[in-house]
Length: 333
Image 1 (cartoon, one colour):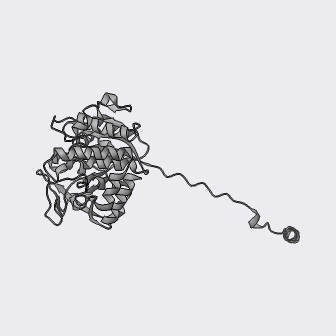
Image 2: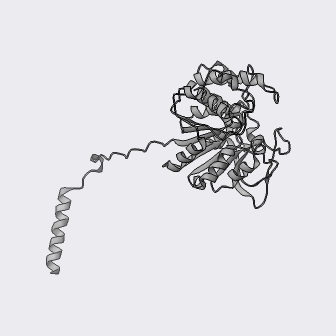
């Protein structure tokens, strides 16, 4: 048995040696195809029409190819008027594939950009309009195969009610919001202030922060410093892109109807708080982001507090000038 095995082994070695080894270079191996990058499904919750920065934020969102805007929901105050502004801007941008939802109406308070839609109703919008915008938000999140990024850029009564109706949305979404004032307020280097979005509905903000989802905020510390001027702003003024032309129309109307700040649409933008929140979804590297424990007070402060909810906040800049140039480029491309 041992002799027979030895003979067979020798024969096998001889055969292999005579055949030679196949040359690896002759074997062509096709590289596996790389999967296409998936877009991030996004919902914008906005009080568009009160401060012009929401309009800039929506225009930016529509300009970022990484984001898949599914739904715009109006929030706070006259939500029907706000939905009309959002719908007309989406139509101007050629994006009537995006649904519009009417949020919880709290008042008929004046909306500074309202005259832009004097001749426009929601019935004219070619896309889908949801009378129950909160319900549409819940359904979209719960039915999505991918986690949804929810971008609230105003006071958030819609978010509070959505969490009350369906708490499980916090398991399938994350928050990236313009909200709060951690170490600085409206003035650079100033003490923290009750930031408008929080102050208008502190209970709703508290509910949003404390829900069990990831929360990233663009507070006044950074968002309150964003402004386009000089060559960056001139690029905006010279753009023939339809959504940018509609944006500047809105900016001129808004500037004539507000008294809480100074704005000159011919020379510079106003403060673009909300544009930073949209940017953080795809390009957080412009900012220094820290984990902080935050308590939301009844009077609208978002204070560092040991034992408070841990959230992430953009508290400083890595490249503010670079961000503003990037912003102008993205808006006009």
